[in-house]
Image (cartoon, rainbow, N blue to C red):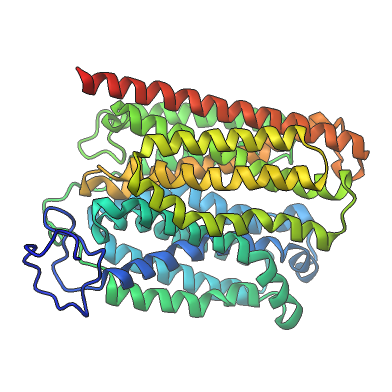
Amino acid sequence: MFAGGSHSGARKTESTVKPIIAGPGEAAAERPYSARWALASLSLSMLLPSLGTSIANVGLPSLARRFDAAFQDVQWIVLAYLLAITTLIVSVGRLGDVTGRRRLLRIGILLFTLASVLCGLAPTLWLMIAARALQGLGAAIMMALTMAFVGETVPKARIGSAMGLLGTMSAIGTALGPPLGGLLIAYFGWPAIFLVNVPLGLATFVLAFRCLPDDIGGRKKDRAGFDRVGTLLLALTLSAYALAMTIGHGSFGLLNFALLLMAGFCAGLFVFTEARTASPLIQLAVFRDRVRTASLAMNGLVSTVMMATLVVAPFYLSRALGLNEALVGAVMSIGPVISILSGVPAGRLVDRLDAPLVVAAGLVTMAAGSIALAVLPGIAGYIAGIALLTPGYQLFQAANNTAVMGDVHPDQRGVISGMLNLSRNLGLITGASVMGAVFAHGSGSSEIAAARPEAVHSGMQITFGVAAALIAAALTIAAGTYRCRTSSEGT
């Protein structure tokens, strides 16, 4: 059955049109395209940015030796990428709304691919960092516009399944990075961890060029202009916050405090400017939607908790449980594997049930997983906690993304998708810094690698006690928001 039934009037052959093609009243393309192949190109566009994040981490020791640099310096290979994504993702989402998402997504894929070549050929560390920032710009475009495109390739009844698939592809990229990177470095050297993106990027570009639908209504001459001042102020705000959370490696000094003040000042200027410009980067009215605002807040809280598992687990498994590097890697791979297996079923469940119900179920499961990680001892306790936390996250992510993107006007899909990704990235940055500091404080040592096993275990308990509290806060937000919505609908 085609979406929209036999009366859709679509002039496409059965070999071209796939079952998830949009029907009348939904995002219809002006040219024939295969919805399955379009979704395949979007899936690759979601996989590459996550692969670009995780594969670089495993190469840091090799890069430190290659460039004869301190570990703090080579960390900027990772930070430059994350900072570029965080500061630009909302702006490029809005730029896609203004200039056309199909063309900008292809530009983003080419930028990511070209920057991967430059990373693999970089002769100095600082050129490498610059290339990684350019790669982050390409990744920001891909991440922001991929989810925005879902509404133009998938009927509304199947958005949950599509979001689940994109979540699975992101998990595959994250899980594939470390083992693939290790193999590439061992057999081909460190440039291979960047050059591997080139054939994948070219394949993604070809699919996007051939299979993605035209922008709805074509390119319009009366589209609002791009808000350059707002873009600059938002970039300054997010850069200052991200730097405040990342520099200092867990210690919060005068510079961190000054950067936070700068972030607050720039944020105030941004709000002042957006309220007075004719074509704002972010229409402040979107925050009057309680569900959307709550969804963004919950997304940040949940991402903070998920990042805590990546920060804390290596130290807990090695120091407190005494596992060697191979076993640590094997145990830590359980979470990504569960994510890969649970992403698509989570999306299908969202299509069958109300998104708010699935959001609540995901958060309850995550709370149970956080409590298990805090109180259950040993490897079995860790695996039990991860086995609850990870599918709970996939349930939440698929339902929350669907709730945010399902009813967005086409002219706002890019910027709303960018804000959704921004809230996730801010959560990841906060999780890496704040939850890492909580773990260090709970362990009673700034040098976790030398802390006693009992101290590390105590730090684990405190960290995931805080994580459970953050998930409880997200549950409270969800309950209050959807209760208010139900009451308003009833009246």
